[in-house]
Image (cartoon, rainbow, N blue to C red; front, side, top):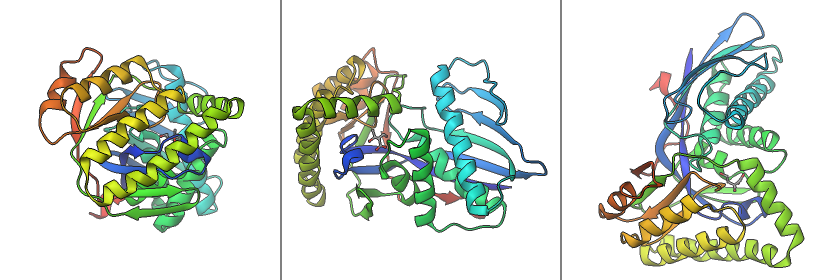
Length: 330
Ligand code: MEV
């Protein structure tokens, strides 16, 4: 039995635009997905997923059938979750050169599904690491990140950047621009997260932006403007200048709204955080619902969000210095 965990992430800047080769800065956070893998004697996959959403669901599923458990989670989210796991197992089989390797896979996640905190990337990274190690193969982090990226790309119909998977594998703050992925130094920012209790559909949202970008020149320019904003954000990050970071986060949120990926609940939480005194606030990840992040070292933003009706949960998130972690070796 092998056990690997990987952290979720928030985007300080640059989601969506990163899909078109612009830079982005995601930051790994100390909320993890943990995957336990046991090799089987046959070629089947059995998946047990606990807390795939924060609702605390427990589901059993046989990866070789089309059956889906009857739980209070939207079918499209379940399909996405199973799709990511099945494809991660395919990547592990490919790395092992054992197309018929069977596995029992158990997932425990502290990350809400599809809410912009990188739950799928964390599950995929931890699953590939645990499944390959279960057969005695140690992938280095660069190969692990690449295989996790290929998994997301396949599940999202070819529309994914390396940002989520690289960040979850390496931990810390990272900068991703096309194939150029690096860890960067970053101060420990006072990150507050607000979650509306819901989720967005990454594939649909990314496809929607692609369509608008092809249709309207001003949307293509907006994507380029987000890239320029990220470059300015890098300077502010290096200078640990929260005022500047906050202003740029607010601007990034506005530009994401222009791309059509915000939602009433995300906008409401962003304004609640700003009204409470946060230096800045924006949605994180694909959008359409899910989470926002804000910068505030006082308790005011957590309190303000907690009393905002559309906010189901507000919490602080610490930077996760460690990316993928081998829990059975710790
Ligand atoms: C989703 O977490 C982030 C997006 O930029 C998609 C991607 O980078 O693959 C929307």
